Image (cartoon, rainbow, N blue to C red; front, side):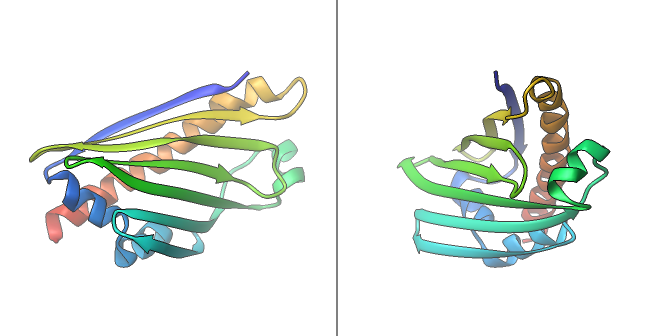
Length: 161
């Protein structure tokens, strides 16, 4: 069984500005700076873009999890963006953690008018017999903490740009 992840925040900007921020190379570098290290690759043409971000984070992981992933956690994120309407941008995304039996996939929706809502929904699946279902809520809470940091980064970016 998979756990549900849901996270929503609002920004005082139109959807186009928010989309342009989320796909801006300078912003992506700031997003990576929230982690220990990382890289990104951006391809395609606006609004049909693919973003691949790899980040290394120093996570306080249980010993059982460290056996699989090591001391530092490498997270590979892929987002595939499109624009279904004039005030809406959407991305399907996946998060992979090499050497870990974790699958995370979902959708990002960016919509609004002068105030934009960013909503993230995903399924989190930990493929470990017996322990997987118990670990999934912890993974969801960890991701929510990362998303809260990213929401603060977004608000700061909008305020200063």
